[in-house]
Image (cartoon, rainbow, N blue to C red; front, side, top):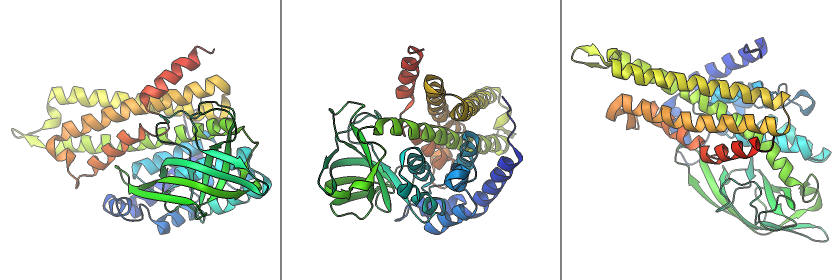
Length: 378
């Protein structure tokens, strides 16, 4: 495996890192992420102009990237700046349209790539506990289309999303993989009720209730009852993106901690000279490199592996960053002492994001169990 990025990817990483450091400083980031909007539409448009969203999709879909390492480069840069813009949902909804969308639905990709359309995946439900097949929302076919009823939880920027990709059951029982269908629903459709709230680590989400929401027949994405395979497909992209974002955040937390150990003095000397703290920091550095290897393996698997091998690499990466990210957050705060918990110190916000990434698209316990189950398949 070649561990060197191509020149284009290095240029993309440099451009994104520079833009994030100049335009998305921690104070501005916190004002946006913890504000009423939860993000900045103006900055999201600038990310689109830089080609950030286009890098997530292949050329035949209107982008200029789309490979596993392209996605990894983008989200690692976003993680370094704790960027709260809705790029994750742009990725997964866009990939769903590429995988299963009709020609008329794929036209929406251009608006997604241009940053003109904020979209969100509305799949998780209360009590679903990360299981993709656990869907109780229903879709009933009518003469003119479909009627959707149910509740979705923790929908990223659900209040503001222009377009929702909603999973609903058109057949089978609540835990069946078959019978799940996907629908594109306008964010302002009649019958949608949204309860928005601030997320712990910044940004906003919403619980969405669908009460007799009517959508046309062409809102169905892919084949009726075959949505589970699409959900599994796009979840793979989400796992890679989140693992890469976590890696970027870990690198910054590590750097801040190293700088603190080199400058904070006790008894007239830098605390970084204390052997006990050096050992703890060395453990953190080793764990981060282990996470980096897992992310590289996952990025490669997205492009080159299939079936069980691909899913194992993705679950391994998500498990690893879940475990390591929590460890980095805890150790960094402890090595800083009490100041590590203060709002003013950027580290506190990196620690919160690292912990919360573990709970998106399956925590470390979920992916460890999934990895074991996949290993028993072959």
